[in-house]
Length: 68
Image (cartoon, rainbow, N blue to C red; front, side, top):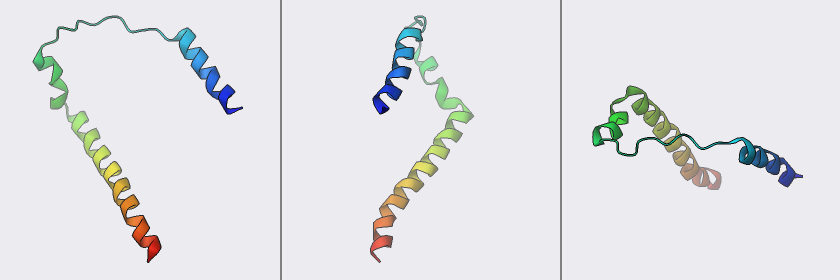
């Protein structure tokens, strides 16, 4: 049953998905690092670091919590 549920979206993607048009692959170095100067990227990276770091900290702490 689960295989059928996975197979349906896979078939839809294979039939309907298209490759994006080719983009100029000769971008300059400045264009490649432009994302480093966007505020949203830094904010999302900070949010990711806090949430993922919190998850890692919690999973590291739980065994000692349950043991004690």
